[in-house]
Length: 161
Image 1 (cartoon, rainbow, N blue to C red):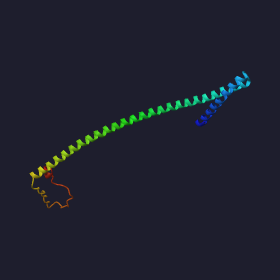
Image 2 (image 1 turned 180 degrees about the vertical axis):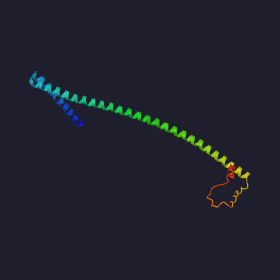
Image 3 (image 1 turned 90 degrees about the horizontal axis):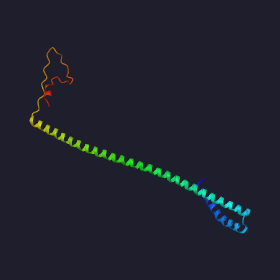
Image 4 (image 1 turned 30 degrees about the horizontal axis):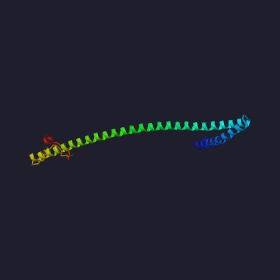
């Protein structure tokens, strides 16, 4: 039974009760205890019970819906609170990472400046570029092989800093 149909049935019971009550009172006043007056009294009681039963069902359904709505609202509020807490945590993480990024960039710039300063000092100390070491002449009994790009004398590399 749909809610609209229940509402219409309740209105029918209320209307029937409004019509039957005065009629029952008139029959009781005119005829006293008679089968017609008793039958109308039973119809009035049936109409009243039907209307109140439907009203009670509507109230209990409304109460149930309010309880469900309150539970859903509480769950929603809990979810909103947990999301807000996660957002605050993410903000703290972003702030911490931003601070670390700033510190590390500062250190990187400082190191870059030190390296650049060191390179400038080295350039001032050694104005002349060292000549490449001479390759020893191959002896006559050794066959001359083309060089494959291997470094044979690494003393100059060891002295570099």
